Amino acid sequence: MGNPNVVVIMGYAPNNDTMNRFSMKPRYIAERQFYACRQHYDILKYVNEGIDEGDFLGYAGNEEKSSGLFGANGLLTKRAIRDLRAMLRSTDSNIWHAVISFTEDFGGKYMTSYKDALELLNAELPNFFRSIGISTDNVIWYAGLHENTDNQHIHLGFFEKEPLFTKENGATKRYRYGTIGQEELSMFRMKIEERLTDANFDLKRSRRNLTESVHDTLFHLQGLNDYERELKKRLLALYRALPLDGRVSYGSKNMDKLRPQVNDIVNFIIKNNPNLKIDFDTFCTDLARFDANRRRICEEQKIDNPSKYLISEKYITDIYRRLGDKVIKFALHIKQKDDREVKRCKTELAKKHIAKKYRSYLLGKSLRIVADVDDEAINCFEEYRRRLAKANYERLVEEGEIEAE
Image (cartoon, rainbow, N blue to C red; front, side):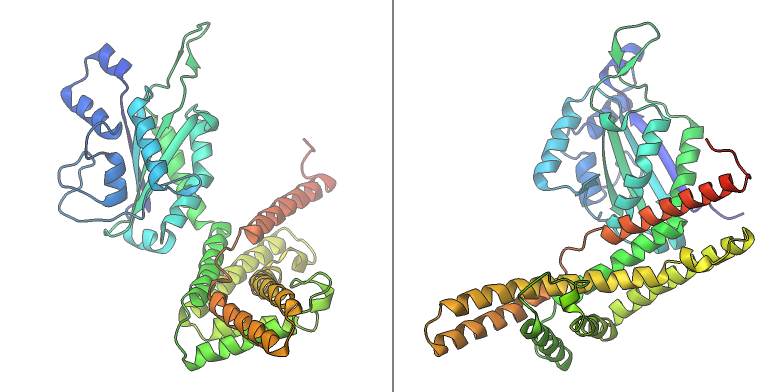
């Protein structure tokens, strides 16, 4: 058997109470200084900036940069890092520290950026905290993904906000003891691998790569090559044709005639950008694999009409709707501002000047129109899975295979 795809190594820096009661060795005191950020070079600098030889985690001789510190809400700002450092210095909680390491092939496939690590930890840490008896509302965690080594790995740290544990029939509250059992760590490791290889997680990753590629494509368009000229020409044609009255969005009735034009812009971007084309094809492949698995399950479960459980068409349509809405929303915003200015003008020359200004503004700002892609489709997909699970449960109850809970 080969090496496991995921390895989790976890320890803790004991709090002052533990060190005082057990007369901890100097190295444990020094370790606490490092993880509690009570020295110049501390855990936050290590994770955020790289590795120095001889640090507490035992890495040496290999310069490494992290993707930056992040928490549950994303990358930490400088102010957030200062606040976190202050909390670490003042906390009386044990401070847990972990390395979640991946084999080279596995990490290269499933852990491609800090966003993969962020999604993974947001999905699995709540269950892990509950398994070790820590309330998810009473914990602060922080992490960083180190990528520039043979094995990508996540550095994770967490501590309790308040002491909530009590002895039986006791009133004094304390922090959780530091040691975490192997059973909980093994389950955490298993859940990490299951989560990363889950089809749903694959869809999230490929869909995120797809939408980010669209953003990068539009945001970095510069110069006047043939592709850029043609894209700007198509965006300008849409800008001129957009209606001002009624609801104007990808699915609205008064966009029926323009929807093919919007799809044409999305198709043009995908077709003419190799990286985006690869991401889109990957997205479609993930959908096809998911649907193939659905068909297999339906066949094994003797479910008639499996087509109603398939998602490929729905989610490809959703991609076009989402990207199309971004294009439409921004073009409409500029068009409305343009028309208001034109109405104020008293001469035709002034009107032409205003129209030209806003057309130029549109073409310049069009590079940013897909800068913010939310998680609506992901949420929709997860809701769909919940509905499918509910439908399967109701079917099994109806057929008498299981009893209703």
